[in-house]
Image (cartoon, rainbow, N blue to C red; front, side, top):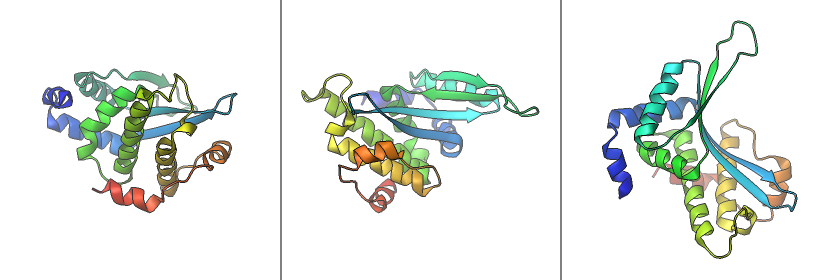
Length: 190
């Protein structure tokens, strides 16, 4: 219920605006890396990239009201005549969860499905981290539910034109059963 108190400080219009920005130009990302011991590590990020710095400033203002402090970087254009790009990024699971919880009710479509899957993944990782089975830095490979959620996330991204899970990671994860994309799409609309 603490989340409700945090949200009371933020105007619904601000949250809807932020949801629209992430729904249009945001990126929900699960990135996998295989460690030397063949354990799989997963990094999460929520990013918003814009050429207009005032949009990044407004998104940061709203997130600060949610007690989330995103990292901001700028990229010089690769070609002459292109504009500087500004990148707002959140990588801390607890902060990603706060933002998703605040804006999810205003989102639609594939980005909503991605947000819900990411939120489920975070919730699962929190539960798994609390169990005695997991030690700091343990692989997600030992948690079948986390693997299933990750596979669903990648199936969804692949279905909307993003490249799928890298082959070297898929080979490791394929030892575990995955749910079908149809279940993900159906559950995202509820």
